[in-house]
Image (cartoon, rainbow, N blue to C red; front, side, top):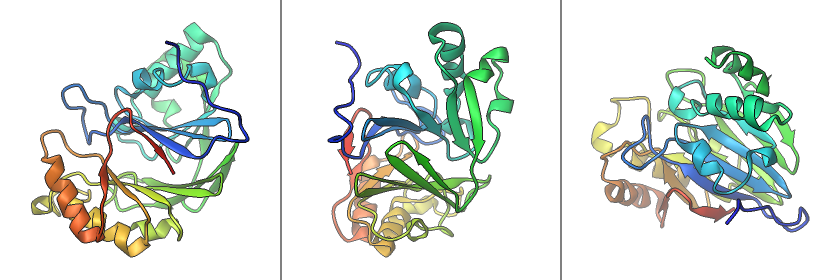
Length: 252
């Protein structure tokens, strides 16, 4: 069976497909942060951690990718861009892929001439970018390097992605009316303050404060009790939440 193809542009709702959801490094059989966004015939890769390019091709051909958005420079969120560049430059020979990111990741690639397969477009906090049927807006989070959370609007629906953040930033900074929030919940509350990340409890608290309608938890460290993270998040959120699962498609 070949890659999935988007439906007609007029009928395709905003959707999120999880390509990777491990935090910091991929666990056994896993992959790091990467999410396929689709709406109205437009396809965008949001973050490109290790293992995500292989999973992307289970859903569409690389030639059908319209753009990439990367939240920050930590390699667990972008290292597969190097493989994407090699594929596009040497094998597929498609037009350059726009890469929206605050840091110039193209300049950091170790792929020689293949880096020309990606065109860096700088985005800053507060920026608004239209990519086909989707509009992206960005908010600076509380992390160890400059990191941009992302709001995606398309087809009358809104998705919020926390990227990586500590508790000094919250989902409410992405604006009201989020139909679905994809929020990092890296560990349990007993590790709060040990790293610039959110626990399940903190993710649930942030989603509750933002009035999020649906909460999906991602970026768990390998080996962390995911069900315990979920229980913490639900208690703080005040309702059911979900754990991101590789291959799962969410209609926003």
